[in-house]
View 1 (tube, rainbow, N blue to C red):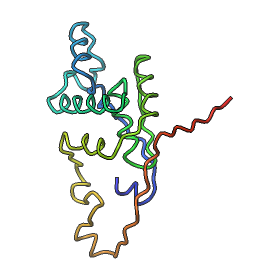
View 2 (view 1 turned 90 degrees about the vertical axis):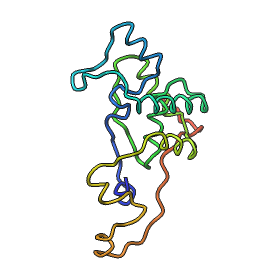
View 3 (view 1 turned 60 degrees about the vertical axis):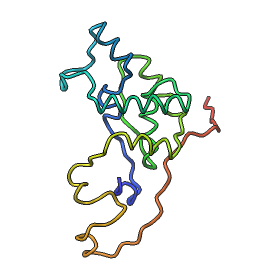
View 4 (view 1 turned 30 degrees about the horizontal axis):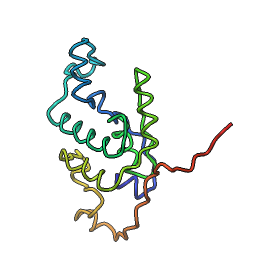
Length: 167
């Protein structure tokens, strides 16, 4: 993310909905009852982990706060509001999926709601980010190579009540 901010690049993330793992307890129970397991080709374990259940509960809480119908819409809105130019690649197998994708475009999350969602599960950026850092501070090797002057970050695109109508 720091590189995206620094170079003003767009992001097109894949797997925003955790490949089907973001679902409510009721949705998971329905899957058990109907035998609909979803896509299991690359991930045979379709049931959610404890961490995924915690995140789902947090998404449900935020959905209630903003009046959203779907936790999927909250997850998509969260990702879209992390960097200025974020355009997630989102699929869907049902009409409900497409409707929640569209609902995300009308949701504006507060900084407190974003911080709350980020506090639920510790984030592991993996390599090389764990070595490089998150952009808030430069590591010693980077500091030895150059002098850096931090610039203010651009704000993410947020929904607007001013709607354009195209005919």
